[in-house]
Image 1 (tube, rainbow, N blue to C red):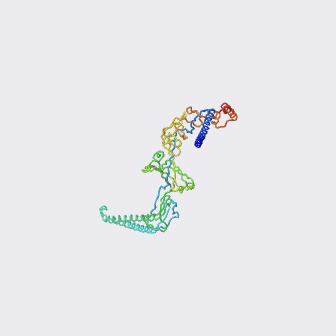
Image 2 (cartoon, helix red, strand yellow; image 1 turned 60 degrees about the vertical axis):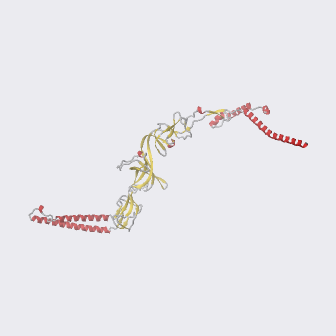
Image 3 (tube, rainbow, N blue to C red; image 1 turned 180 degrees about the vertical axis):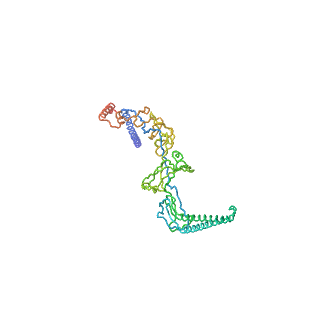
Length: 462
């Protein structure tokens, strides 16, 4: 019996101990919450201040209508205006070649490039001349016989008009005349062939390629060399259809007219070189695949060989160049920086009341720097250049030099984390408070703390 009582007493004590372990921490936590709420209710409430929302500051430019000279960009490769393949018109062995008969050699018009052995053609010319001399002698003889026949017929007392043609030897005389003409033609043909043994430059030319050399035998029709003209070169420039109207192009058939000015640039040996030229003509067709037009710019004396100007920048054939064509003047156009364009055809403008206006415009054309507007924008408008994260029509904006307006609709009371009015003003100005203001603020803070701080007795009661 004593043992069971002892076990019951041990169980009661164990339960009481467990209950204390749970209730004591809960009591401490509850007491802490009561103290926190009491102290929080006694703490001074932070002052409320109004925060002014400023209108965004933007950069804008005033635009005006005026005349614009468009610059159309293109590119192409320099090509010769004429390329000729020289072909032998006679056969024979190449006897002589010029010292300049190398690729890149320059020949003046009519200057000899090479010569085919002329001996056979000199002999042929002598033979033709001999036949011509014989034909002339025969002609003289027939003329004499014809005159003698006429005199003999007159001695008969009959009319000359009734004389037979054979009696007057007219057929023989006519045959002699024909023989002379044939002999003259043979002489001329022999002379031409002899002349063709000398291959000369058909124009001021540079040698592009050669296929023969001294000692080689060539037949009629053999290719000898390839030359190209150097009096002027050309560059074929593709132009879009909507840009062709802004270029001055000479009329068809007017070879001596000059069109728009063209500035060519190319990088040679790490340096940018420039040439000034002009549009000489248009090809007059539109490419069916790319839908572009082609205009031709002419470059006079690209190698500086004709004028012998040592200061002329050489522009070799085949050089790739960038071209900037100076177009014609177009009136009543507004040009704005390209960065002012929003989307495909929208821009932001600032009205006189400093409100944002989103405007759709009609773009005539654009380049890498500017957008050219024909319609949709008033003269004297202020176009916004600054990018806005959120653009809403009618929102307030500020320009440089404008005062900072107060937007009453944007004022919202918020808690300022216990800062005083002076501290808030100093924070907005971005400068620390002065010593006097700091001392005044400290005294004010102490006064507020003394009024709001509970007494020692009250703390003890808690």
